[in-house]
Amino acid sequence: MARRRALAAAATVSAAALAVPIAPAQAAAPSYVALGDSYSSGTGTRDYLDDGTDCLRSPAAYPSLVAAARGYDLNLRACSGAVVADVRAAQLPALSSSTAYVTVSVGGNDAGFADVLTECAQPGWMSDCYGAIDDARAFIDTTLPARLDALYADIRARAPQARVTVVGYPRIFNGED
Image 1 (cartoon, rainbow, N blue to C red):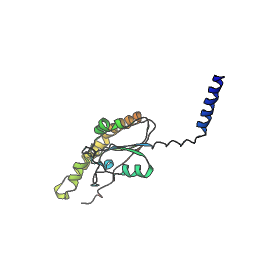
Image 2: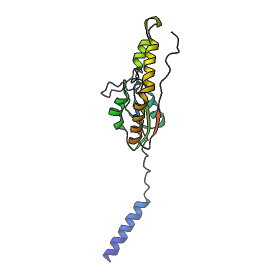
Image 3: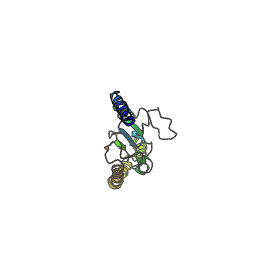
Image 4: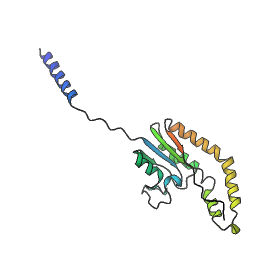
């Protein structure tokens, strides 16, 4: 008899618990990891995160703006001056199987973008702009593809379900002195 009462009491408590409305769990925001160089970190915005690095990461960088607009959980790993080797060594650990979105911009520093920019910003009579461009283009055509292929394979291995977007660079010069 005591056993029946205990079972009846347990059944009543269980039924009461089922009748209490339970708030739906909040879905976790999709994980977004931004990899790359200054074009992704936000260098030049003059408003930088105090994250203990010299990466010049900005709340005004495009990854920050995209994440805020879409409700993504951003991990901004991009760092000013990064080359492919830096992304592989220091930024890829931020990726995981739960990463939903990845953007990456890298390769310009490998190709000597800043050197070309500096050379070509001078008046034509005092620079070797075409030589600097030819050197960078040779690197881009011969060496950079293998580095990027290896990087993209590493991204896919670490974040197999992620949607990956490779972000390019703007055209800065119009071909006139």
